[in-house]
Length: 163
Image (cartoon, rainbow, N blue to C red; front, side, top):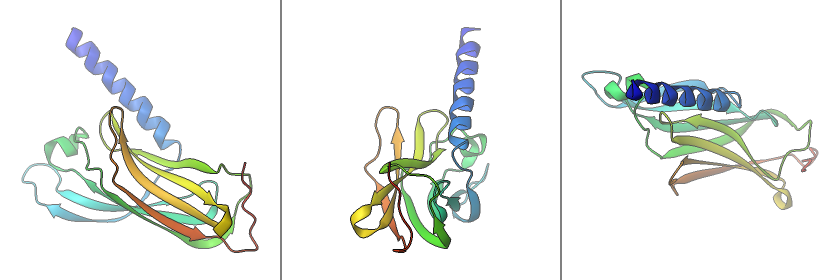
């Protein structure tokens, strides 16, 4: 009974964490490629997902990352690798309706059942009139220094209100 209760508690915590991260932004899957064939369960793959910046209209970030397959991956129990790549681009007129923070997490997605997340942080480079986006992976105990960065120049006519 004790084992069942702790397992149930872990699943509840995972659900709450997933719901909290999901409220930030829902990615749109653009596509994927298989990297390793798995006889049982889904193949290992690299997925490309698009995230629209919720506070900066006209900017979309494309993140590519590894997704672990196999039985554990199919059940959502595998831990995905920490490597990810990001490219953010202007896809329409850039508008910023409310002041944004100098540095703010704009996307977060779970990459293991409980402890690991893929994060995208937006930073404002006021001297170059640009938005800088960085992706990295972290864990509750120890994160990874692997990261990827991209920048989107903001047209001079557009104010970047920073709070």
